[in-house]
Length: 195
Image (cartoon, rainbow, N blue to C red; front, side, top):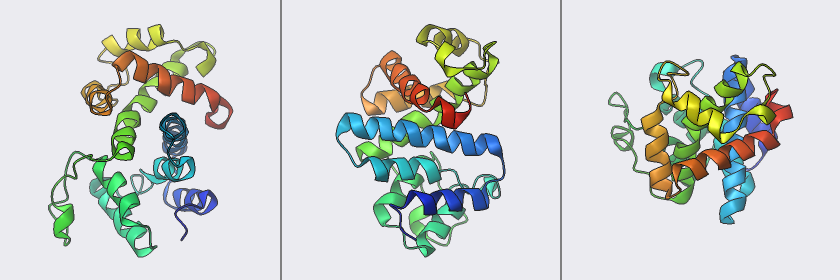
């Protein structure tokens, strides 16, 4: 499978992921990865495809995510750099893995690793803010509305604020600027996301 062919990646996502919300999450991460690739002068197709496929195994294999997916992608011939970025978005290893390299967490070394981690949880929080707006539209979401919901720990409790903060810090981008960047990226793809 060609790791630069978005259609192949999307087919794999749809094969493994029936949950529509999870598919939208991966589309959101794809959009934000492409945004940051443009910002940093990186390969937009590569970064976007990493974002699109990063959680494809979660729906069927949540207890082994992302390691089951890494096995599938390895068999499909994906390059090590691609696999490493997906692996590095997990802050844990797979102690049951037969592969010694997967037993410990992978440190986020490259910029692409840091971006994936930094945008992953934040896309979910921002989309949750859009869902509770009367219009259910991203265009009606502002940085201030995200920050207001941020303080409410019961709101979108699955979006780990400490991971978002750590991701922005690792990326070296002030938190408010990072939130605005991700919001801008998501607004540009509002039709794809149905928001």
